[in-house]
Image (tube, rainbow, N blue to C red; front, top):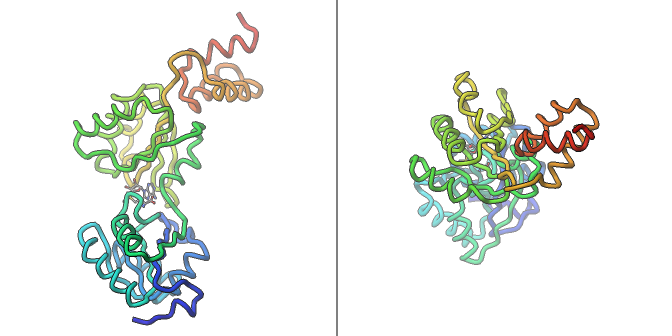
Length: 288
Ligand code: SAM
């Protein structure tokens, strides 16, 4: 294997963890390209998939696979190459490696062996979805994939229900309907669900609606159930009263819109019930 990393200005005997595009190949930073060009080899979840990205940018890096089913053997290979002084990159098929993706155990082993692990940050589906979701909770919990079996999924959701933050999940198309049905059954129906589908791709869509309406919305069109999904659910409504943040949103909307429309939008944004916001809106407008 070539030892070219030092010439490329990279650290030697180090592992770079490189985030790659979720779909749109343009979503890769200059530093990620520099690293992929300069390393001695790239450990990939699927070498054919990564090859398309490398070819697109004219990068002729050597690749080998590191996925869920060979992580132990591939980690041993990583360690051997690092001991030989090689500089390596780790990538997954899309987004940030080791985040709901293979690589976490390899990174742990590399760090435990005393080698440097250097993140090259970039795309991540959860963060991309949150950034465009319009949800305003100050905190979020990234859960990743819920359990595949209904009983375990329901149990996991029951444990998350009271957390005062946005909940973020990953889901695959073959389970999207079941998972959304369970979200609606376990969590408060007025919480807002944002369904972010096919981010950065041709059929990207980001829809927000009350959880209570989500299953029928999905059922209405099979295209809505295709592709890759991030689901984000707004924080639970407060037990009583309207939080200051929701009140502020309502005030801003009331300044621009008719009362009913402002209440509807404020409810969608904040996850607070329309009734509570309606009463507050009447108060603010000075209407009895
Ligand atoms: N490591 C990746 C990241 O940083 O986001 C996540 C990989 S995980 C195996 C794949 C899941 O991420 C998909 O099932 C989906 O939930 C989500 N995902 C990946 N790409 C996406 C996209 N373009 N749009 C929406 N969700 C996506």
